[in-house]
Amino acid sequence: MLRIGIIGAGNIADEHIRGYLAFPDACEIVALADLSVERSEAKRAAFHLDGAVAYGSPAQLLTDANVDLVSIATPPSTHAELTIAALRAGVHVIVEKPMAPSLEDCDAMLAAQRESGKLLSVVAQNRFRDDLATLKEVLESGLVGSISHVRIDSAWWRGLPYYDLWWRGRWESEGGGPTLNHAIHHIDLSLWLLGRPSSVVAMLTNVRHENAEVEDLSVAVLRYGRALAQLTSSVVHHGEGQEIVIQGERARVSQPWSVAAETSQPNGFPLRGGNADLVEAIEDFAAAHQPLAHVGHEGQIADVLDAIRTGRAPAIDGVDGRNAIEVVTAIYKSGIENTIVELPLEPDDPYYRSGSLVERAPRFYQKRESVQDQGGSIVVGASSV
Image (cartoon, rainbow, N blue to C red; front, top):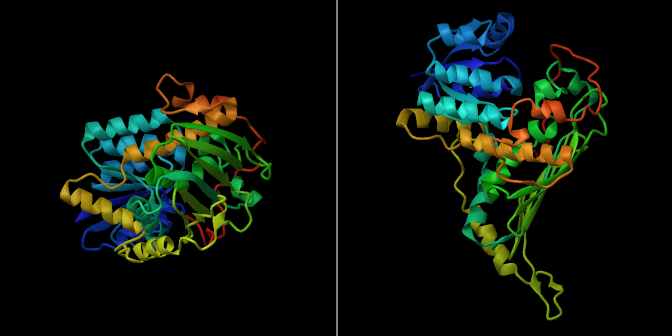
């Protein structure tokens, strides 16, 4: 029975707690920690974790609780310090996305993981979704052919009060805007589905949030050989209509799911409905997908628990988390410096280091409000990734 600690008592901690509670024969939540014992205690009580102890600091949890695995569900700027501390204490770690604000931080976390011999997994819960697993299986089948173009819309909407929370809206504490903190989901999926791009060009702006330093909209183009992908990262899109549209040599497949396939007339114009056999073959292949036993955070937690039990690597590790941060960093560098960024980013690149983004990033607006907590529920778009 693995002993679990939860570090961070905000809203995202709920997903981790529910994930662990789905496996009562494999693990038990024994400790929760936040910056105040009151917040930890409130979370403990809300989930009726009668056997758990609430702590007023993560350090106290790591010292006193004798845990095997911790989930780190705190603001991004704290991820590196807390992850390294846990690994050095001999504890396995699941850390929320984004992994950390800088590649330097990510590499320090990876070094601590190697030195400790413990497991490090960065949350990418959307890989554990049946619709997206189906999309990946179809791409790997070869039915659509080589990739020509991909359109990825990480489209969210947030009102002004969103950035009033104390750690949001500042480069120092949040690490960036939706490019880092919302599109990280889609960026991870792009890496999972397409691999790593060779270069990136992007533009950043803040068009609707006058109480935040960070961007609220970015548009990037990623190069994959001759193919291109365009990524929109936004918190200004009404309706939060999110899509991944993959144009292949022989067909298009999309999430939300749809399929199209054209054939050519003698003059090169499309013959509508001329490739119905291929559409049917792709639909049949997708329909044969075997549903995942566990999805979302629960799915990733199931994988990590099994990885610890069997001694194997997790499906999503620290390198996966770092790769997503590399793409984010390239987008920020391109948008700030007005340049095409080639990948990989090397340690001598200024944007590799902690603090460089904070020093160089534009302050679109001065952050006006800083509240410690906010009421209201977290609402996610119906078609969200």
